[in-house]
Image 1 (cartoon, helix red, strand yellow):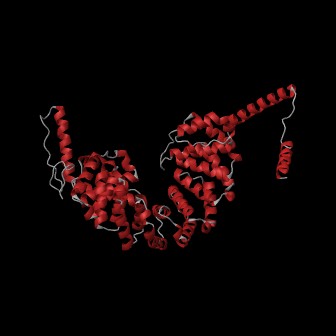
Image 2 (spheres, rainbow, N blue to C red; image 1 turned 135 degrees about the horizontal axis):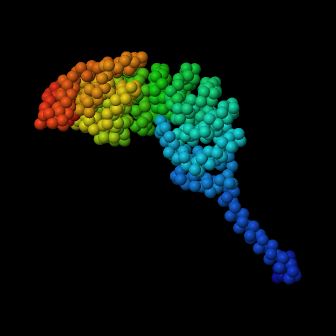
Length: 493
């Protein structure tokens, strides 16, 4: 019985199996043609899928690759694709603020990209407009596209997200581009929504204001109040940026600084040398004396001293010198790092470093002083016409003051510049800072008068020797305060 049932089930199963279609030769030929057409269509779709897909510009490694891909795909790209290419280009270039000219601004493909963006500006969303501004800030681009984008962005300010609002101010700050209408709209909107911003957005806005060198009181007060209430949200990058930006604007909120000092211990281990420098500069600029905070910053700086660049070591020592905070481990470690990096410093940084050493005895090792003086003597001194610039005037005044405090003979190059400058004959400037710098330089001239006279005699003797009036130039005895001749090399300690 069982066998009979199994056999019958098997027969039924075989009966319902799919049977091959009985097709004629004409049908089979038509099916082969259709199958070939389907295969061709599939291959064509796969070939065009790469072309039709949005290009991944952010994955390309160099500006050259970005521009090359944009040129190859230009005919199939939209305005938003052009924004993506422009933004990727800015991120790859990432020039420091203050660069006057974009190095690729005359590139043919970049000009084509600029033209495409100009044509597509009315179609861009608020996020796209913000990204164009940020990219321009990254690459220090100031072409014809920038005013057009600013004008369109002004119309869309109410639609800007908080992130776009913050980064637009930041971008204008990187460019130091004060487009009045857009800037006024951004500041008004930021002032009205400050309490809703996150810590990172507050620090980005502050950095943008510092780059623009403007201090809108209502906005900054709102930022300080909001940052004080949200101080726990600030990380090791946001907090130094916020405080250093306000310090550069000469805006010091002691309540915010005190809250930051209380929050600092939880962030110290994550701070890089730049963050440590910015925190120290913020406290020193506010003349805020907080020994536990300064000790914590000094200990962390001593631990990470090998990671400091020369400029960062100068900034840290300068901040401590302003507060007369001469901590043993920090001063010695940063002094050693300064000595190792001194050859990379410019004259203004060397002047600040010398001033810091004059106020921090523990950092003022003889070897460090010797290296700094050698670097100063080998540095290129400003031209005479540059003495009309405030920055140059202040640098020279600081350098001369520091040399006098340390009782060090000035380098010959500095003496020659002072002698040729005739600083005492210049009309009194309107700025109090400039007047003080001129007084300091006049005092330095009077203090080093014997050395200046010796240089004048030596110069006159060399001229007479060239004219054949004397056989050899007279030997001038340099009356430096240290009693050394040619004081660019020898120093008393």
